[in-house]
Length: 624
Image (cartoon, rainbow, N blue to C red; front, side, top):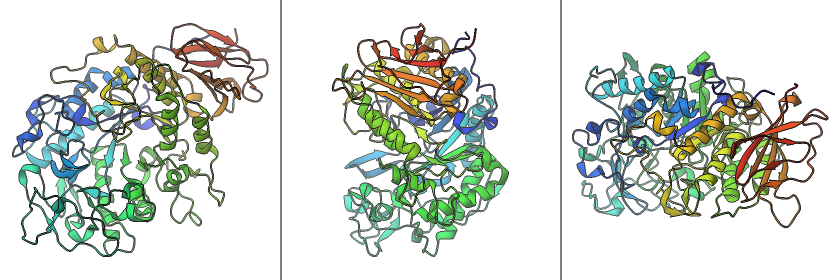
């Protein structure tokens, strides 16, 4: 019988654009927290030096991670060895570098979500010279060349780049002149935020101008020439009338009455995306012009669209349709997936449909991050010591993913193929941790093995798997506990002076675990293309759970179906009889190989076993 896991990655040989998106393994990295490859950019010219934290400990200040740090890792083969095929980076555009009010206090814009100029790359991220030593031109041209070089290096390594894009808001580019003195009183909270008003707008909004914080009118303010191409932007983003100016509401993030679409986020400035506004078409076309440039001239392969449910649905319909039309044949190689921070599968799925879905079934977004599955997996796995929850909720979340429907009969996730022939279900993004309040899975009380099992499920369940930077070395947030909502997990992975080396990484069992999972996914088609059927969830109807979650990834050819067994308990466990009728050939034998756990083979008939705290993949045995 042929071994399941081969030393070579089957998919890495294919060029990035030749691969299907559901073949990818995504690595989500917060660029400022990966590696400081170029200390010279830690305090760009004119930047307030107090915003940099040399100790890389204060999560509210810059840690120095940059494109050079990612380039060094790419050059060393770090991501190829791990089995990553796509890197999603936090927004690289020029940001406002400081806000006086965010979650109750001042913070820096190290994360990239406070845009100041949509067509400039933040100088905290770029270098004066290329890896080759060639000097870049000064200013925005040089910064954009560095970004293009980074993307091209990744592509040369067979890795796609996904650009995080924020179309809901800009950074704190204007202030509310509460005392009408024409001066930005930066110590006054009510000049950063004012209470939300549903009717009308505040008429005291004025552009800020504080150079040391890169706090200026939003750019671009008109046509821009970069990389030898004129980008025909109109300056609509630099027009204060393009913003809602309705102030901030603490509970707007969870609202569904329109407030979530209209309100500022703290001191961030909400763009007015109402389809009835005079500037709607100009705003849509401006973003199409900008991101067409990034996807064609710079070469990024996809967009992760931030804060989707806080933007009018019709805006996404117009943006995605016009951008795909502008890309033409290139659209088939790109992906547009969104962040809908919600556990309701109907709410998530609605953005894969157009607002006028009753008459036009074409996809709006290509796919979304599977938050409902993330929440359910964490309920099952995110427990202290040897404890575990029930897998029934995860099973229900997956059932909704595949079978959930709106009242009118439409599936939650649109089954109309996009330009690449894949639909929203096939391109759903599976994850268990991220940079927001969910944050890092491994906190106090979570062992390295439990973290490995969590990533094992991400890599073997349906969807495109997305790993959060640092999980490959079991980076632990020691400031947070299980159940906390925090941003404490935004830690620096490779501290200054500690460039990653392949020799040291091969010694890390967590890295090897991700490596094995990547190889399995690359060599076993069912883990990429298979359906889902739960076979065993915690002893079936027994009142005493056994920690087992067993599911099949069925294929049309039953000889290619696999069964995955995840055992969270501290002892070896075996299922009772499992009905495999219609899933695998009658009378076929299955052989299991631990991907996480001790090496060895486990033969099954219609019962499946797994060692303590392990993940085993069973395949139909090859004929002798």
